[in-house]
Length: 516
Image 1: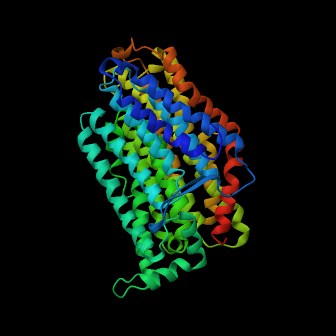
Image 2: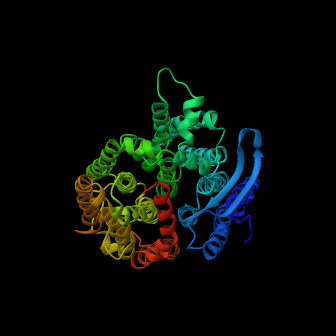
Image 3: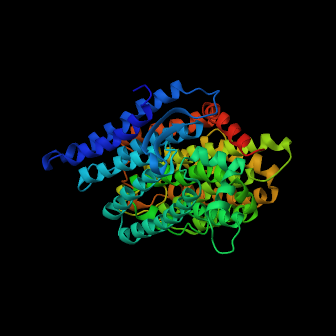
C-alpha cells in the first residue's frame, strides 16, 4: 500500500471486508472471525507505510487527497493527516484487531457481529482523516450506528437500555453540532475545517456571521458563542465531559468486553480529537471566553469520576469511570492551553498539548487491555465480575494477575510505563498555566491510586476463595493476544520520543495558529 490514495485505501478496506462478511453462507459463518481479523489488520500495512513516509519536520497536512463531490454546496472529499491524525490512526489499528482477537469464537450471528465491527473501524479511520464537515460527519455518525447494534444485540442483561442511552445522548450532541455547522455554512458557504480555522483567525468568520446571520437582538459575538456551545456539546458528550457522562458507565458495563475495549480505546478519543481538530482552531476566542467554566468542568470530570470509580463494586464500572477520569486530564490540558499568558510560557503550553495527545494514545492501549482482562475473568467465572467476589487469584492464575497488574500500574501512571508520560506532561504544563486547576485535579490522581490498588488487594491478594481454586490461567492464545499491548506499555513508557517526535511539530503549529 503506497501512493496518493493511501488514506482512502486503508479507510475503506474494513468496509469492503464487512460487505464480504455479509455474503458468507450459513455454513461459512465460522470463518467470519478469521476474515474480520484479516481485514482489520490489512490497514496496518497502510498505517506503517504512512508512518515510514511521514515527515517529522513538517507541521502541515501530509498525504492529502482532495476531490470535488458536491461543488455547489462546498462539499469535497478531503482527507489528510498530521501528527495527531497519524497517531489516532495508529491507535485504531492497534485497538480494533486487539478487540477482535479478544472476541469469543462462540458468538451468535458472527458474520453480522464482525461486519459491524469492520464498519465501525472504517468510521473511525474516516473521522480521524476527513477535513470537510459533510464528509467528516458521515464517518462520525457511521461509527455510532455499528456501536449501537453491537451493544444492543450482544450486550449484557441491561443492554437495550444502555444501547438506547448511548445512542440518544450521542445523537443529541451530534444534532446540536450539525445545526451549528449548518448555520456556519449559511454564513460562509464553507464546510472545510482548514478554511474555517483560517477565517476564524483572520476575523472573516465573525464578519460573515455578522453579515449573514441574524438571531433577534443577538450580536455577532453572541451568535458565534451559541454556535460554539452547539459544537462543544457534540464533543463533550462523546468524551464525555461532566455532566454529560451519565451514559458511559452503563454502556461500558453492558457492552461485550471486546466492544467496551473499542469504546474506551478509540471512540472516546473521537471527542478529544474533535476539540483539538475542530473546536479549538475554529472557536479560539469563544473557548477563551468560557475558559474558567471549562476548567471547572474538567476538574469535576477528573475528581468526581475518580470518586465514583472508588465507590463501584463492579470491575467494569470501575474501569468505565476510570476512563472518564483519565480523559478528564486531556480536557484539563487542552483547556489550560487556551489561557492568555506571556510568551515565555509557550513551552509549558507545548508540554501540556503534547501530554494531551500522548494521554489519548496511551490511555487507549491501557484501558482496552484492562477491559480485555476483565472480559477474560468474566468468562472464566461465568459472568461474575464483582470486586468482592474473588480473592487470592495471584496464587491460582499468576500470569493473568501479573499482566493485568502491569496494565493497572500503567493506568495508575507508574514511571516506566506508558501511562506516566502523558499525565506528567499535562500537569507540568497546567501547573504553570492554571495552578489552582492542577492542584485540585491531583485529588483525582490520589483517588485513582486508591481504587486501582484496591483491585490488586481484593481480587489478586489475600486467601484464595475456594470457589475459584480451580480457575485456569491464561492460555497461550490469550497470552499472545495481550502480549502486544503489554509490550507497547513498556515501549512507550521508556521511549516516548517515538511518539513525541511525530506529534510535537503538530503541537507547535497548533499553538502558532492560535496566535500565542
